[in-house]
Length: 461
Image 1 (tube, rainbow, N blue to C red):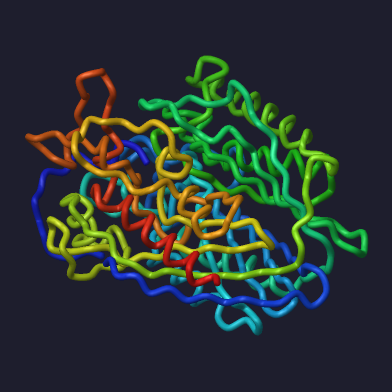
Image 2: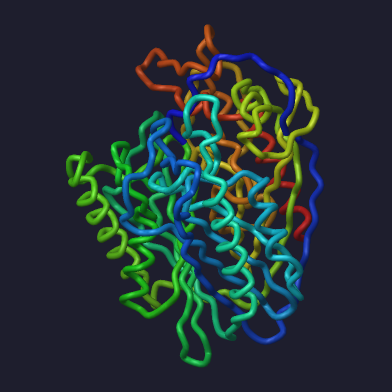
């Protein structure tokens, strides 16, 4: 998320929640994995009375054209006694209000244990949060949002009805010289992960890719709608393999993005997109059957509902104005409110897939070095450590899932501008820009996420 607040207000009246209430569902394998896939384009509305703003960088920039339309892609994962839907939408982010609209539009599906919706985080899609319109004005186009909800719901229902039986495999490739980490410490997950379903009947399989980088290879001067590299990666691998494909963002806070391979302005930005995508396709091709391991058909799902204290007055104001649509509750945050949200764990055999409602700094997942500009603040245990303490040897993270809390920042490096906290960013004593704090709910979020993960994992037993 970039550059969407120039508002000065200290309004404390409405927002979002934090008490943990997990629920888990387990199933025994009956035969093999059952997987379904579907996709829908999200049409740009014709003759809409409202402008369509592009999200990610600048306020009130209307789209000027289309490189490729955004899509909703859905996969149903089932070990034989009910399935979990995972729906990916090409957009900057979705708040829980929109996720709930998609769930309601899908309706009841027999055997559906859970519906989870995430954003690929493309910075070249229409505004789906409302934060990139003119100052104080909802930037979402209501007609586009209706098309988005309908496309996601249609893809979800079709994926649930289009099942094939087969085997599921997990592999990864270590990418090199791909990342730009814009904030100390320079911690990121270099792996491109792949879940691959192979259908017994020889029909098209399904591949799910997870990679921890902002989808913004078109950079900040772009006004063309595009799925960015997630779309190009998926299209390229479908063309090469015949398999269905979808992309998920990993831990991208901090701020993790792909590097610029050429000058990133104008037409050369499109060249940068092509180079970035081609490099990722080569890494995806290197994940071959001899480098994968098979996941046995056992599935568990656990969900924690919790509340994060809301300290950011700008977030509270946008909620009050009806722009943000997260769940608001009374809580102990500095605004008197909190955000009620959710974290889930999908256990596929012994692989945990953790669904996180925001953009988490990789060091909060992987461990290692953290920043220290907020001396004395205590960081939670790394999520990977929490997973291992609960019997999980391997975990991958999908971010921006089921909600958007903004950046999830280590408390030890959470630094605010003392004159305009959460409104104006600040540069610390070693020259690091603390932009991410202005787009976060507050420093308590990291511990709330860690506590929710631990609760969800304990409920898997």
